[in-house]
Image 1 (tube, rainbow, N blue to C red):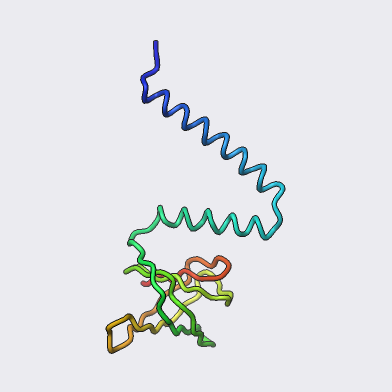
Image 2 (image 1 turned 180 degrees about the vertical axis):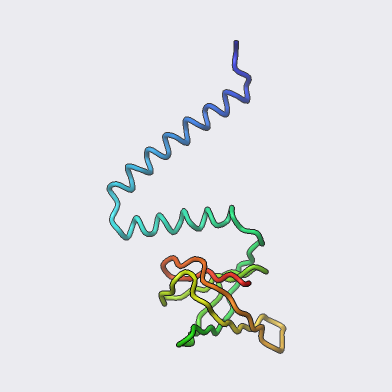
Length: 130
């Protein structure tokens, strides 16, 4: 029994994926901690794009946000109806609650919101709105 053209393509893709995963594993074994961290962040970013419930819009908007004890000023890198990604050098814990204030363009009053840290890669935090 012969394989259909689609089965041949699927088999080729599966083989290529297995080869790629083997190469990635070899790379990880020889990578420095910083390279591993950067690679992990890239994969997380790619995976996040497949898990989103709300489309993200890239932006560059100033934000002031507060934890229980401190206030911070940084920049929103992307936004959706479900949350924001804030570029920051600060470190926050997943689950940490935040109060946010930001000013979209062409708006007289700021938007005030609450959210929770759901992702904390190097150089940023993902905040989900309730």
